[in-house]
Length: 117
Image 1 (cartoon, rainbow, N blue to C red):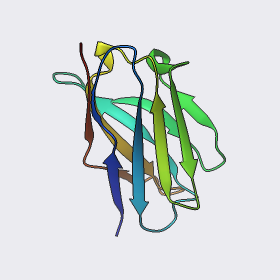
Image 2: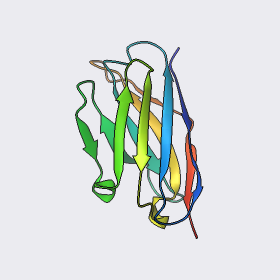
Image 3: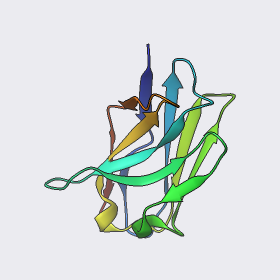
Image 4: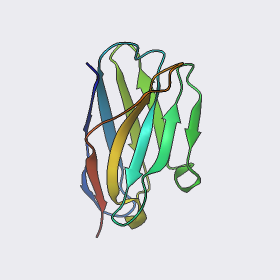
């Protein structure tokens, strides 16, 4: 049974940093594409960053140079390091998994990140 659980969200001031962690329960983590999406009120969910099984990363333009995605295949976790946070980064952040070959997608329950002074 697949489960993705996010942690690490919270309230920070503009310019500060925050780290998110997603812990995966289930099989086939190593071969999965993992990543982070976010959704703000009134907006569609959008990709933030992904990391493939061979550690290739992809970032949305609006986070390039500020956010870093990484994974630990021994611990079945994926992390998002966020620096230089802006009020526009305020959103619910979701952990994402896409299973290799068949493409089934899975989502965590989300964690709130609020950037405000």
